[in-house]
Length: 378
Image (cartoon, rainbow, N blue to C red; front, side, top):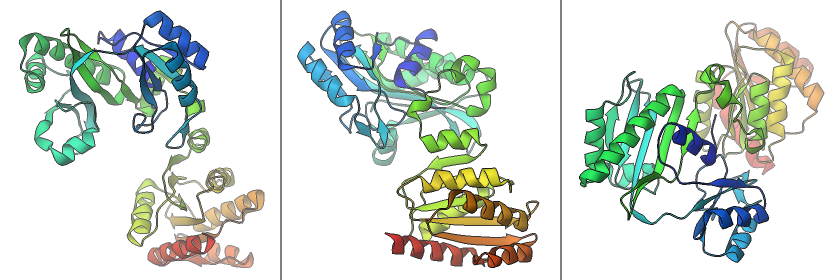
């Protein structure tokens, strides 16, 4: 579950990490009133659950109420990589001396939390890792969090000034504690800054909570902003589907996460672009299949759909019945390529053949076919 910046900052503030004051506005008039209380120059920041706000023009420094009214009005309602801005955060502008990066993420190779810090803050950490990897220090954590001596090591890597190091070390220990205590999959500050007065502030907050831990955090679960999430992902979660929207044109309905990943890789290998990750699990429930197809066919970018099923415990004939029932319900005209193999494969083919539909058994053949159908529909 992604949190908005202002929500992440409240979590940081509660953990003792210094963040600047700020309030959320839903209209330009509210933004002007808030800036009047907090003072100018002020920053207006789009609140969307995706990165790239600054590059899209969703973060601006303003010096007058007239500028605030204009910029807040412009940002509210703008599109940031497919996400509409409904709220803006108004916060005082900081007098920055230096910018750093600090983040805790799960290292899947070692299966442990990883603290990453860099003196090159304010830019994408991926770009730093690619162009100047020597500017990133990585420290693996354990269940105790970040020990003080490791925090001091990281602080020295960021800044040579002793008075700044002390503040940075405290922030890093508390950031690691937030990651652990709130069951995060990401807790990031970019930029973490020191002002010209020598004060350390978290000017941004990116916090992602592990969905599987929300039962332990009902207070965090209430922070979920359904209106800011992709409608397809919201529906998929409600229907028990695993769905992630991507940027391609070929929809995928697959049973099993491993097969779904392999399907997307093969589509990419053969020159196509998957429009989604969608795992219906081991279910042949027509309601789940209908929900999956509804989600994909509502996506205007999807030109063709690959239905890729490997029948193990799940029987292919049950899946075929679910698919036929789903197609009867939604009546889609989107081209569909079906690949079925495994348990009761022949029975499934007979069911589909009776309705004038053909099921392939070779995965490469099916992927090439759906790519061709998508190209025809372009």
